[in-house]
Image 1 (tube, rainbow, N blue to C red):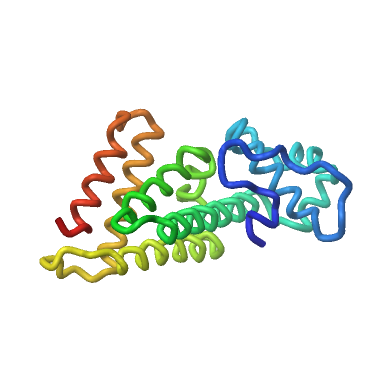
Image 2: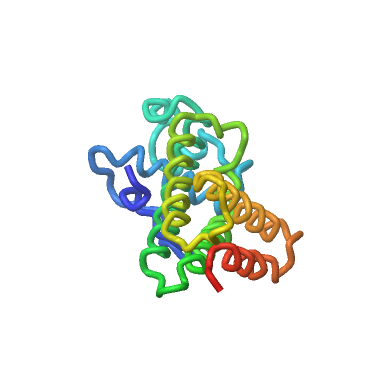
Length: 204
């Protein structure tokens, strides 16, 4: 189920979680909506399964019909985060003007991290990084970056495999986003990283 099916919007001003009457099959989606709301507005430490069940209007026992435990819930949220990130980056790359693809998808990546800082941090939490759905969603996001790299005019002197270049780009974007969110990178860091990526990929 995609984040769109869960009622998420792409940005910090998304609507409040849905609180109307349940329909068949919406309980899991409601739990994920509420969990995301808690995560982004109150932090990971505030995400308690009993309280989450109460917010979603079900019993604590019923929650375990949908998730085996907190780790499974967090893994599902992280996987959905990678899906949203992938869609943003892919959309930015497809819609960018000629010569502006590198800047467009870099800004989309950084924008996601700034819009959803708590979710972004969760996506790289080592305690859930090896969960199957997280690993799969992360691989798809990396593959999207690789496709964008393949479509960019890489400098002729570059002999590294494209998947290695894509991983380097991913690492650069992730490092810049993480440093910026922590306050250690300074306001100019993202612009400097984008200029560096443009210098790497665009023919001058």
